[in-house]
Image (cartoon, rainbow, N blue to C red; front, side, top):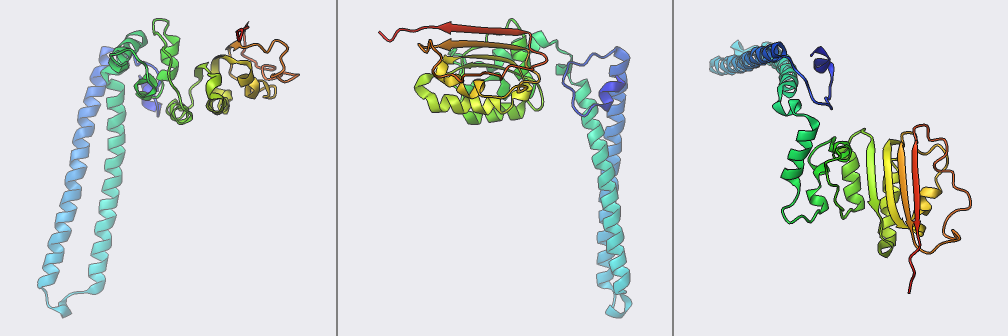
Length: 271
């Protein structure tokens, strides 16, 4: 359990023995008592200072030492500042203990993903971005795609939504599934550009759309995808001769972890 106490952020489920749970509960109780004691000391210092000020008011002007009054004020502030620092440190410890002991930490990932899907998906089955599970947690962007039992539904996505999603995912690797529309060419290219700006974090990239939309991807230099493992490109349209694509494509070269590449082409007749 010691490794959990040293981590600022816990990403994975926590497994605790009964003795660990008892230890954490004892530490929580002790820390709560210490926080309460520090809070009481702060209140006592404030009351003592207020009593001192009231006493000084009743004295004659020649009996009150200005220097003594200033020193008392400074000492009081110093005591309160130190007690506040100690209390805040204990509150951080308390939050850490409660975080480790939280029941949700001990739920297997498969069960947790099922719970979140049932709780967050809309009842009508229409999957809008505001209902997307990844808005509710920091690291579910990877979890929901890794779970084979999770049905990934289409999402109407905006550039701002992608920025929010990537911000919430912190530094985790990203699994990206995109279906781009030629009817919204500008929005689709902006969306792809925004996602590719984080290409050093992309682990899985699955893109479907017309050939003209891939230009921003294919124009990237080699060594652009340092963490990419799988890529699937479903290229639609009638650009048989590749007129809309660059002559030399190097984007996927020197990707050290890339082991699965699938490129599919479909020709759609305009008649």
